[in-house]
Amino acid sequence: MNIDVIFSYSEVSANRIAGRTVVVIDVLRATSLMVTALNNGASKVVPVLTPEEAFHYRELHPENVLLVGERSANPIEGFDYGNSPLEMSSLVVENHILVMTTTNGTRAIRAAEAANDLFIAAFLNARSTAKVLENFDEVTLIASGSNGSFTMEDTLCAGYIIDIVQSQMGKSLFLSDAALGAHQLFIHARNDLHGMASLGRHYQLLKSKGLEDDLSYCFRKDCIDLICFRENGSIFAGKQ
Image 1 (cartoon, rainbow, N blue to C red):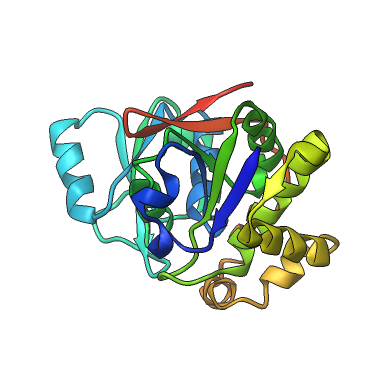
Image 2: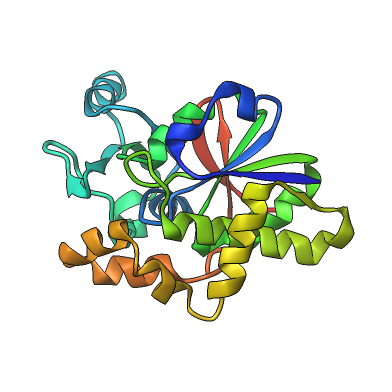
């Protein structure tokens, strides 16, 4: 298996991912929300680029649709929920379609439309995602980043997934320089991932908004045994 890492949604291009299996990571907080909502019974997540696209979807499909998302970590006017995974309880999301737009994560998903297969990952389901990657030869992990730039938390999660795959596959795994960098960052911080990520600008932005509970939750590793995959443009849940 060959693994590459892209450090921001802004760096994604069709030629870098065409024919490859892609994993999109946005720990704080889009993919953590998606994994949580799907685990709690949401029927699917529809990633869109703009609030207008989300409103239009609900006009066409008014039954059991929730609009979820943020801009610059703030809730979007007229949406049902913001971007907090802790709001995605089964009471809220069960049997509902989530139409979601965020500053970074949903842009990464839409930018990766040329991928053969696409999965959604966070620390919450990293191990389950790493296990399914054994079935593929060419893999790219997209660390969504923030506003087009590198973020610590997404790269650490990419490094964690690489670490799990490496422990499973050993010498048959080949890493690009970017993947090596992500893995080395993880190894350096593996005993305090939360502490390392807390140094980052995006983490500090969320902390300044009083979202400490979200931050703590998003660094829980492997507490959800779920694969989240793209099919016909939407994200669904599956088991191995």
